Length: 292
Image (cartoon, rainbow, N blue to C red; front, side, top):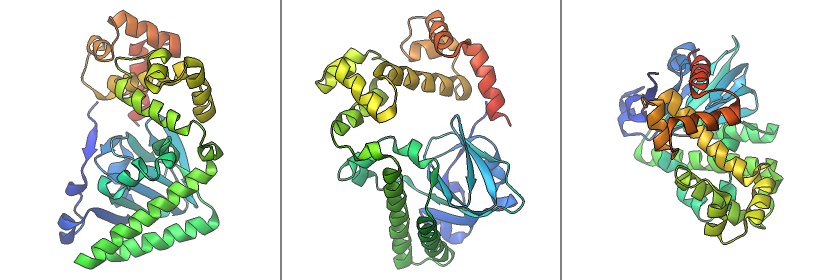
C-alpha cells in the first residue's frame, strides 16, 4: 500500500510558515481533503470539534468526535478521518515533536506517561476544560496568523499549556494512574517491551530485567492494563505484524525473520492462534479497512 507521509515543513499555508514549528487552520472540505486517506505524520496534530461530528481512525481504533472531544495523533501513528457532518466546525493544530514536553514527561511527570498516546488519541473534556482549550487554541490561532519572534514563543507556551492540561485531564480519567505502588515497574516493563519485543517474548525475561518475579509482573500488568504480561507481549508483537503486513514491502518470510520467528510457518501459527486467521487473510482484512 502506498502510504503517504505528511511532513510539517511541507505544509505551507503562508510565507511565514517556513519559520514556524506549528500550524493552525479551520476544518473545511479543502483543508481536510488529504486527511481522508490513511497516512502518517512526522509531527503531532490535534483535532478539536466545536460543532457537528467526525470520525477519526488511529491505527485500528475508530473514535467518534463531537463537541467537547479532542484527539491528539502522535508522530508515526497511521490515521485518517471520515464521515464529517455537514455542520462540522473545528480546528486542526499541527506542531513539531519538540513542543510535546517530552523531557518533562520522561522525568518529572513520568507517572503521567503510562499509555499516554493511547489515552490522548481521544479525550472527553468537561465543559470547563473544553472552553479553556478553545481559548488557548484561539490565542494560538491569532499568533499563527500574525507571528513575530516574541509571539512565536508565546504560541509555543500556549501549546504546552494546552497539552499539559489535556494530560492532566486524561490522568484524572484513569484512577489507576494515581496509584504509585509499582507504577515505575509498569513503566519500565512497557519501555523494555517496546525495545526488546522482537527478540524477547517471555515473561521471565522481563521480570528478571525488572528484578521481580513473573507472578508480580503479571499482577502489575493486570492492574495497569487489564491483561496478563504474556498477553501484553503477544499484543505488542501482533501490533507490529499488522503494521508490517499493511505498510511495509516485506514478504511474509522477511516479516517472520525480522520479528524473531524461526520460520514463516511459525509466524502463520502465531497469527492463527491469536486471530483465527492466516497472515494473508489478516493482510487482506487490514487492506479493506484502510482503503476506504
